[in-house]
Image (tube, rainbow, N blue to C red; front, side, top):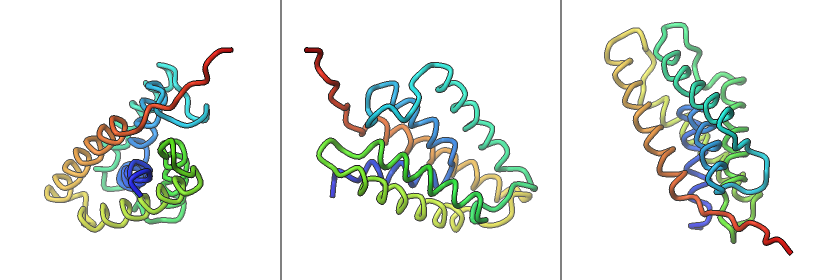
Length: 157
């Protein structure tokens, strides 16, 4: 079960802040902590994903920001959770189960994050809770990246 904790964690981040999960995945990939070559590793990808994460955090506080539970947003969070869970599943874990753990984390992060946040971003209290959620999402993303196992690279023959 421990093999899937990081997968669940990246999904949870995706549920709270989807682009923060994307940024965390690019940083993890650059450190050789992801499975396969699915996640881009270059500095441009990391800069773009990190900038998108910061923009999402700013946009989230706007009164016109859509609810994270609407179908397109929720589906995107589940997809990021699945890809992230697959990519970060431990060496001895089945990547398919890692993807499922990522989806479960995304569901939990979406619903718990929304519940803790409350509904009104126009009020100071709503914005404050949104900032607190940003801090939790970034902190968890950093923890997930640091906790992900380095993947073994194929040795040249």
